[in-house]
Amino acid sequence: MPGDPEAIACYMMDQACQVTAVDALFNGESGDHAEVVYGMLSTSLGKKVVAHMHTSMDGAGGLSGDMQKLTLTCEDGSQVPVVVKRTREAGVEQSKMMGLAREGYSYS
Amino acid sequence: MSHFFHASFSFSLTPISLSPALPPPLPTPLRRLFYQTPVLMERMSALPEVYFSAGDMVLGKKTTIMEDLSASGAVQCGYYFGPNSPHNYGKDLAALTAGVASSQEEILAQVATLAAEMHGENWGDVGSFESLPWLKSAAWYHGEGRQAWDGGQAYTRQVWAKVRDGDVCSGWDPELRALIDSSIDKGKSWEGFQASLKEEPCTLIHSDFHPANLMIRTRRPVALSVRDYAMDEQSSEEGDTEAIEEDAKDEAFVLKMQARAAAAEQLRASGTLPASKGNSDNELVVLDFELVGLGSGAQDLGQFLISHSSPADRERTELPFLQQYHAALTTVLATKGVDTAVEYPFDTLLRDYALHGAGKWIWLLVVMSDMESCKPIMPYFHAQVHTHSLYVCLSVYLPASLVP
Image 1 (cartoon, helix red, strand yellow):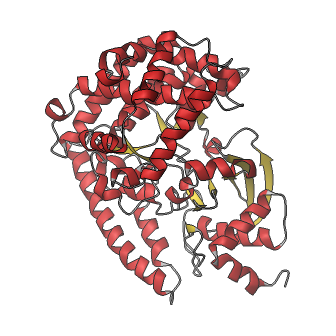
Image 2: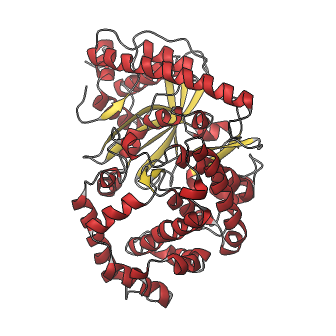
Image 3: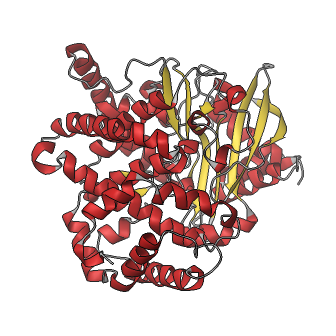
């Protein structure tokens, strides 16, 4: 159910769903996916995230990644810039061959 | 919890009270490694703060959300190495580096010490990485992964056969070409490779350690938030058995790290702790751990120097860089009871720098020659390797079995 807080909370409990939500946000979607990511980052930052803005980082991202800057707006009016890095579709095969997803492990 | 994604997100139903400017770092494997020793704990700011991270080696995908280092004024280190590198072609380097007053020399000095600390603290400690099987080359150090190794050897032979007489490689230095031919023909067997791994010191290495993968920024107050970290962990969701078990482990971990922090404080007070940060007002941050793994520390040094520096700059900075690295490594290893004068003298570092530094680049030359995106810049990388004093060094240290 769109906008259902319980559904969003459940989504936040599942790591694969969290990744799906970040991917959706990366691709410009908003709605419930954004709410999931806001919830994740609110917990981590210790203050509620209520909005975001994308900035492209063309050319950055290492061997197989794409990067994007997100400027998060918090409930208290402050802004927190973060960077999202994820495997680009065209880089998946190279990533598999070279094990590049290990970066996700090293930070997790 | 997904079985596909090895990930952690420190989820809590209870809001935690934290300074908004200093969110707690997640207890990542890299941070755990850095927390292991007082020396590396001092370097915690060399790792970016990460708010979410997940990876799947089977699907080949990863997703990470981390601090925006540019917001703290950090500048990519490669920009300080001048217009020689293709990474910097067409860029206004003066403008890009205006935010942090630094230089190639300062960065090299800091990198030498940082690399020595990272390598020294994990020196020869293969067993401690058994819980991190995803580290690059880790399986090989445990006698496993022969199929992947054989595949890599076959791939290199196949690529060289394809590109050797093509447009990209035909103009290469004849001695370099002969060396590659010889290496391909006389390459080690799996058994020989395994034997060589046992003979050489191994450590945790970055494996993609070039200047563009580091940033430099004006030093900021250290967010050594062991206490915050403890609060974060203790606030994990109740009722989740797995979380409770993790908490129990982490509680012990936090206690251990608090003891380490106290030990570091004592060492600092007594002046025993190496001046790991040097006297600079700046500090480094290391990024891009896609290839982090086990290997020769000298491999990182070779990559750092060969990637960006012009041959003239390298001639000038190479020896001081290696000397500083060795001096810092000596200090760190002494705390572990290892005497480098006996076990890793400077000559051995030079040998490793040639074999693993230049050796890796020569292999890269072959592999990159078959990548469409790299072909236009191959003359640059060929020049970087073949004019490099490493190449001369290689002629001294090359095993007789590989001499063309």
